Length: 517
Image 1 (cartoon, rainbow, N blue to C red):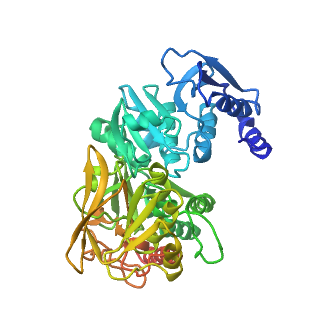
Image 2: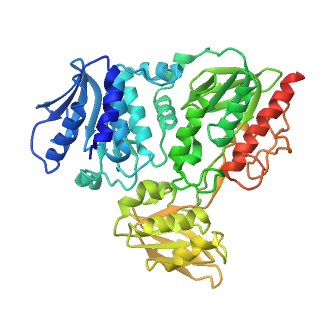
Image 3: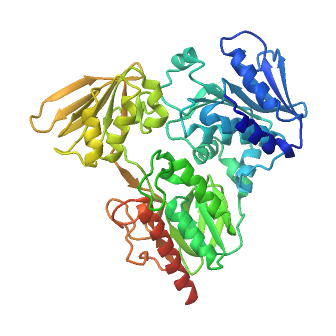
């Protein structure tokens, strides 16, 4: 599992450790124990500041495949149950480095909120090692634990604890429990965790009340391709720039295969997001991550109020908040998110191994999801509302070649059927004959397009009935000094390369505006 190349890289990463870190492994026997010991021993071998110790923790740890991190003999609150390989390997390495004294890259205002928690919060994060979204949640909660001794965070690999998965009826990851009760599941990121903490205790927001940054020339709202492009172009003009993002990378982070970004023959969403961040870090740009914009006060100087309680005073605004997955809006959908209803086939597909599932949507994302799932599940049924599929011909041809993919055209989903908290089927209508049918299955993956993230702009700028911000050919909105770019706007063809170009255009338009105001 740990190659010489990985061990050499770890040796470099750990060279500047300031504190001694101990992996404390629970005593006992387990079929995976030997593999875990070998894994942790390999990591410990790269530095004399890392040790492995087996100890009875008196119930602190879950089982013999659980371990915690101590820094200079003090419990950090970070626990792992299972072997954090795959996507979670980075979570372990970051936990090790942060516990040893490496500076946390968490905004000061987020730190203030987390440090203000004055009650015990014990988080459990159920993950699968194939989930590319799960590490964001694990890493965020690990940092919360390091910031506040009242907080603990445990990563639990569902593959190692199938009985626990069954007991809690978990059918999607990440699934976050707080003090034994479900806290958040499905589409979860650090901003959602912060929002939910504030929902539990509104007084946490007081930690940042009245705080305001220095005047900004440009505030970019959104951290996807359009937003990063706008921020970089603005910084290159010598402007004072802040970018606000609840989740840096946006929807791109969930895209596994990207082959149409010109000059980059093939990449993945996570790789592209990493490159966007690396490029942006070359410039003097302030990043406010894991927070949302609650409202905007218009005027010559605009005031952007953040969910953290902080305010940004700015001369111009560029909105590049992109879009999110569209929901079906049928009975049984919201009630069963994480219990058979999912939006990410890469994350949740492994939970339906050997089972029958459905994909709602016959566009590119729907057919790609069906192809991804076909190698894991027993069968996939694609539901398309229109008589013809909207996906590219090459994708449709691949799907039609698969024995375990069935495509139903001209059908409408009436409801998602569930029993005892689990999805058991789809009730759908043949739009040509009017006949209703219930198809038994275990999971439903919704892939029906996107909805603009523009709700916070109601009454601020003009929008279409679908929520797209109306812009002209220079990204100018109806409100002076506010510009918009990317998938949140009326610009046709929602593509990464187009969003990048629109972000650059919006920045240049904002610069022109600032020259005359």
